[in-house]
Image 1 (cartoon, rainbow, N blue to C red):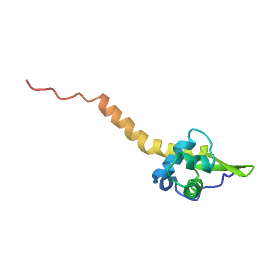
Image 2 (image 1 turned 45 degrees about the vertical axis):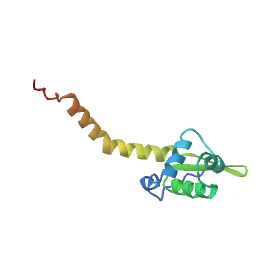
Image 3 (image 1 turned 30 degrees about the vertical axis):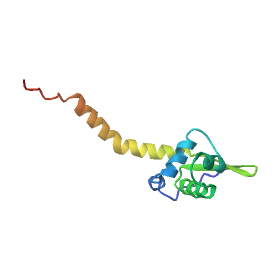
Length: 110
C-alpha cells in the first residue's frame, strides 16, 4: 500500500478548498482519480496534484488495483489531525461550556 511517513503538513494540505473537497469525498469511501475529478469542477491532472499533496501530508493513501490507483483516507493521518484539534480546542471548549453553564444572564431592569 502507499503508506509512508508524511513529509508535508496536513494543515497546509487542508488549506485548499479543492483538497478539503477531496477529503470529504474520500470520507464516504475510496475512489479513483477519475471518480474524484467527475465529482469536482477540476481536471484529472489537478486532482492528481492535490492527491499527491494530501498523500505527502499523510492524509491519503493509495493502492494499485490493476491499471488504476484507488485512493482512500489514511486513518492514522486523520486521527493525528483529530487528536491535535482535540488537544488544542477541546480544553477551550470545555472551559467555555463550564463558563456558560455557571453564568447567569443579567437581570433585565423594569
